[in-house]
Length: 119
Image 1 (cartoon, rainbow, N blue to C red):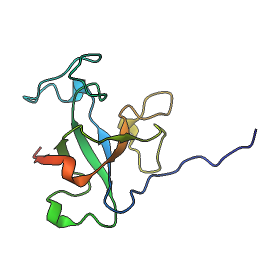
Image 2 (cartoon, rainbow, N blue to C red):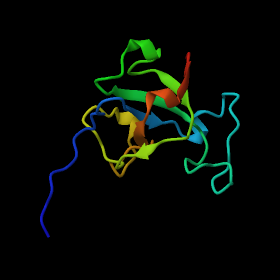
Image 3 (spheres, helix red, strand yellow):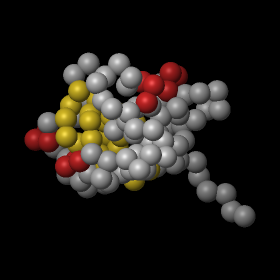
């Protein structure tokens, strides 16, 4: 079995946005309905369609109305999960004791981001 290099980061291509999903317990203070895992309404994301924008593809510009670091609400119509590995820019709080992030990460299309949450 050959060894492959460890993933160090994800850089979205073209018109894609790399996001880090908030966990259900992180958004309980908001007025968003939480859908139980396994529910027909869960749409594969176990509810909680809020995320932090981590990186933008080269074709995503400021006209979309959001940027890196923004907390966004998005439609779950299209979400491509990325391997859950520690990235170089991870903050200590985002990691658990197994050195893996507590939040899932993935790619979405910018047209699926429907709002920016002001914190």
